[in-house]
Every structure is written in structure tokens, then in C-alpha cells.
Amino acid sequence: MNNAPKCPDCDSVNESSAVVCATCGRQLIVIPTWVRPGSPKKLLRRNRIVLWPLIGLIIAVFTWFNYPYIPNLIVVIFNSPTSDLSSSWYPGSWPMRGGDLSGSGYVPWTGEYPEGVRSNSFYLGPSTRSAPIISNGTIYLGSESEVSAIDAETGKPIWTIGQTGPVHGTLAIADETVFVPLRNKELLAISASSGIVQWSFKSGSPFVGAPSVDNGIVYSSTQKGRVHALDAATGSPIWTMDAGDAIAPAVALVNDKIAIGVSSGGLFIKDARTGDKRSRVRIGGLVNHPPVVGGNSVYLVSNGKVLSFDVNSRELPWSYPLRLVWTQLWLWQLPVPTPPVPAG
Image (cartoon, rainbow, N blue to C red):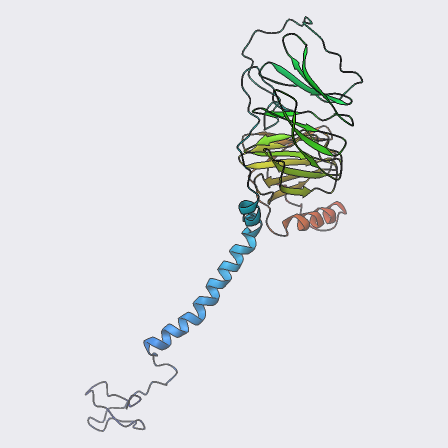
């Protein structure tokens, strides 16, 4: 009797085949089965059929746009630095190339202005491209085949250790450890007070990039375009990146991100802890100077121009190759819109 028509006037229930009410004679309106409301269970089942695919689609889209930025759990869990060593600036020091982790080349002057009169000298031998660093009144620098610590006041050597090849990269110091990039494919960690080697790391190419030390990780690049992130206390690898071409002489670090300039015309922004990709930009010109970070911007010099990019920008999946193809079609003067400019 569930499908039996009910009279709207007298509420009498009639046979399912009835056209008029047997009690009052009123014509009955028969509602088709497909129009009648279903039971609550059927409605709930129907809603679930629609809801679960929709939730799955939302999760898939969210994962697609964010998976490149999910930290590498293997690196986070198994490749953790064992110290918090960092190249920190303080008055009277110059602990690394560029003076600080951002590569700014600027530190506030707190003493008397120099008069330009030579106070002492120290002979290094053949010319070197290794710039001096200063910490606790001691100058550290490399030469053709040596690494030396020199008293800044007297110019007298505190210690000197020989090497098997030129030391052309600028050194870096963090706490009591000096980091030395060598052209014999080694990166050394040396005691700042004694010159004793604490550890060494061997790469497949000469180390030419000035080291940077932050949060227990030392970063340095090789001649063939590989960036090594090592445990500053032990020399154990944390992560490695292959840029595919020679890298600018130093990297810049800010807000747990590392900016890497590629000489052939590229900029990489990566997570400094895990090496995971954040963004990359094709410059279109040579990059021979290291990047510099100020605020939320990373600056590069290329072809006589200063370029600025947002260090917090994130590259969406497929956006980089799509932008390359788009730009090339535009350069060929094909009927395509002007390609978007990278964030910055």
C-alpha cells in the first residue's frame, strides 16, 4: 500500500490503480515513482556517491600543486646535521665571502676608519684568488698550495698547512672550524686554532665555490655544477644538487632557503635543509657573480643589468617547461601572448 494514492480531500487511501477516490469521488493525482522522494538511506547513499569523488578530486589537485614542496622525509629523518654551526658576523669579523650568509658584502663599521698605511705584510707566494676572512683577530686565507692563519695585528703566521693543489676558493669560518674548498676535489674542515684537519669530503670535481655555513650545514659548489650540503661537524652528506652547469662563486641563504646562481643563466631557489625545489628562473644571460639576498628579494647581475626575484615564490608543476616553450614561441614572433615574467 505504499504506492497507493491518497485522496487530498478526505485522506482516504485508494487502490493503486484507482483514478477517482472511492469515498468522495475526487479525481486522484498519481505521482510517478521517479518523482517521489526517496528514503533517507537512499538519499544518504546518493550523496556519498557524489561527495567522495569530489573529496578525492580536491585532494588530488592539492597534492599536485604542493607535492614539490613537501619536505623529503628521508633527508629530514636520516640526514640531520649534528650541530648548529653557522658563519656569524660580529664587529671586526668577516667570516665568509660576502661577509654574511645573504652575500650582501656589507657589515657596519664600528672602529676607526683606516688610514691606508701598511702595518704589516705576509708573503703568500704565487698569486691566489682566495680572499681573506677574519675572525677573532686572525686572518685565514689560501694560497697556491697552502692554507694559513695569520695574526691580524703583527702579520706573523700562527699556523700553515700544505695542500696538494691551489686553494683559489674563499674560506669560511664557523665557531672554531675553518672550511677550505680545494681544487684537488676536496672540502676540508680545519681547526681554527691548530690547523689540524677534522674531516675531509671528496667530490668528483674541484671545489671552486666559497663555502657557506648555516644551521649545522656547510654548502659548497664544484666546477661541474654540483652543490654539496654536508654536515658541518662530520662532513657527512645531507643532500646534493646537480645544476647541470658551472655555478656562481657562492650561494646566498635566507629564511631557510638557498639561492644558487648558474653561470649559463639560471637561478635556483631551494629548501636549505632538504634541497627540495622551491622555484627556478631562466635568466637568458650569463651569471658570473653570486646572488645576494635582501628582505624577500634575491638579486642577480647579468648582462649589465640587476635583476630581482621573489625568494618566496613557488614554481607550480609544469610551469617552468611551459614558460620555456611559451617564451620560445613568442621569440619566434608566433601569434601567442607575451609570456609571464617570473615573480620578482
